[in-house]
Length: 400
Image (cartoon, rainbow, N blue to C red; front, side):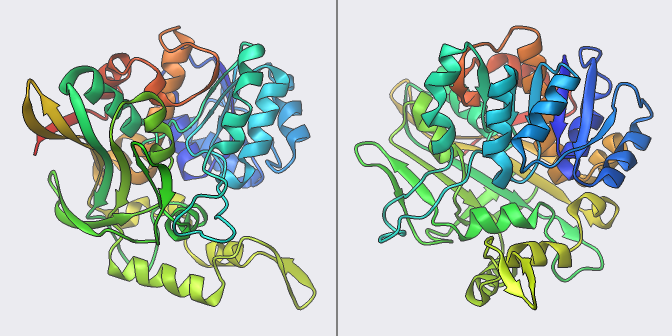
C-alpha cells in the first residue's frame, strides 16, 4: 500500500512509526506544511525512500491531488486538524484513492437554538457525498482513530457478542497523565480540543434523534481501570454521530474527563473570544485567535519525555444479555512510558494512531471492504480487535 500522510504532527509521527515495521506499507509520504518537522520524523524513521518528505498546503485541494498523483497512492490518510477535512476528503475522491481520517468534517451550531438543536453536524459534509463515493466505488473510512475509531469498533462488538438488547452506549475517556514543568499543557491538539469541548455536545436518543446540550453537561464519576474515579462531562464527539447509524441502541453519549482546571481555562478562552477560528485584524495582520492560543502553548508532539501516567479510552455499554441486566466497559489503556520506549511517541498520540494503521492493514488485506462513506462500526469488529495486541495495544473488558 502507498499512503499519502497529510500531517506529520504528533499523531502523524506516531502513524508513521507504528506503520514502519509493517511490510505491507510500501511507501508513506510524509507531507506537511512544516517541512522541517516532517524531516525530523523522517530522520527518526531512517528510511528516506520509503518515507519521502513533501511540502503540502492542506487548505488547497490542488496540492493534495498533485501529491497523490505524483506518488500514485492507494490511500490518503488525513492526520491534520479537521478544519482541512473537506479539501482532503474531496481530493481523495478526485484521484480515486481510499480516504481515511480520525475526526470528521466540522459542525456548526444551530443559529437560534444551539443548546437544544444541532445545526450542521459532525460529518454531515461527508455523509451528504456518500452516494457519490458509492457510484464511483470508492471507500472513505471516517473517524478511525481511538475516539472515534476503536471506541466504535467496541460498540459494534458489544452488539454482536455481548448483548441481546442495548439501552445505552457511552464513550468514556479518562487519564491520570501529568506534564512536568507546565501549569497548562494539553497533550493533544489544542485547536481540536477547543473545537470539541466548547461546541454544544450532541446526544442521540431513540425516537428523538440527535439533540444538543450545554458544554460540560451531565457530570458523572466513572471508575477507569488502573486510573480510578474521574469526573467526566458531555463533549461533542463523532461517536455520537456514527454509532447509531450501524448499532442498535436507545441512547449514545460521549463523556470526557477534563478536570476543573482544564474546563476553567476553556471557559476563559471562550469568554475572551480566544476560541474564535475566524481571522481578525490585529494591527494590520489577519490572524485567528485560536491559532494564537495554539502557538503560545507547547506542541504536544514534543511533550512525551515530560509526561507520565496512563490514558484510558473505551466504550461503556448498558443493556441485557439472556434476560439479565448487564454493564461492561471495553477499553484500551496506554502507558506513556511504554509508548515512549517502544515508539518514541507520547501515549495520547500513539493510542490514537495505532487504530488508523490497523484500519489500513485490514483494508490492504481485503478484510475491511466496502464503498461509500463508512464508520468503523460498519465493518466486522473481530479482525480489528484481534490485531490490537499484535500492534502493542491490547484491549480489556471490565464487567461493571
